[in-house]
Length: 449
Image 1: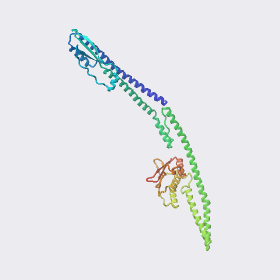
Image 2: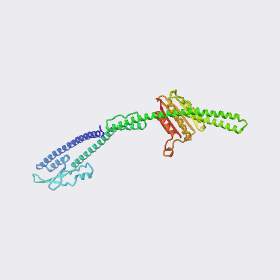
Image 3: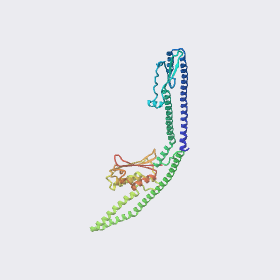
Image 4: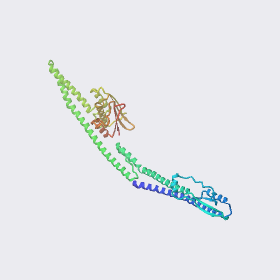
């Protein structure tokens, strides 16, 4: 059902119920008004009886008492009866005005400009005495009735508006409640979770939006799978190139440098007594040794110890990481203190995942050396057997991330891009936070299955 149709049906139903309620309340109010009118008509009949009795032999005091009793009954509507003798003296009690049931200005407005003069009726008694019956207008009951009727209508209208607003709010909230599922689905898509489809709902428009988002999630899932497969291939090619480069450097340059060292050593021995030639030979030997040492360090970076196995074997990740730190310290990084803790709990890591973890830590350490100006770095690698996760944590006490908006914060280095690519390729998650009290903390998690 469409959203507009659903809202109109609910509002129409609520409006119909409110109209029925208003009709019933109006009928009850009219019933009470009719009862008051009937009672007032009966009192008018009693008044006519009292006035006709003025022709009998009762005294004026008795007639005045009857009229006062009739006035005190407060059922004579719209007027008050007074009896005057032949000299104009009032024999009945003065009418006590009823308190207004509303604001004084409202009573004056309702009374309007209608004349409030009394109506006099001369009556001659059997003894020839002339008396006067005076009808004094009293619009207060009619005004109160009109004002009460107006208040009733205003109250009913206000109640109808209030109920309609509440019904509209409830209907909109109920009709748009599937939006929570849609918003949650959008948040999951934004966070990279495409595996939870948005459930269907009864509202056609919202259901179309949800299904469109589900199709988008399916398309993103397919594209992400292709991207991960491509990243796997690229990283495999990269590792193959590193392996081949390390092999070529070792076989070609390593043998040539070793040969140069042998020749230089021979020249040193044969140039005994020739100081200039001997110094030159020793310089050749020292330079070739230095180049060979740097070549070995480069070979370790290209194909570290523990990463020489093929795709069917598991690497010793802890040994590779400790060798990485040893190489960094041997290369002169003595000002940076390293702290490594590895707890794999006997878990056998896939070759590709171990290589990814090693390369991420390697790149993170390179960034610390180049940019962090830190004195300490902590590396934690452990396996969460319950959640089946491989967790990495690299934290330093350097200057941390650049401030947002600064020139250094724009763009990303190739190292960070490589880290994100390896995390994405292995279905992992990456978080970078400021360290406490300073520095940068990188957290990476990889599913083991």
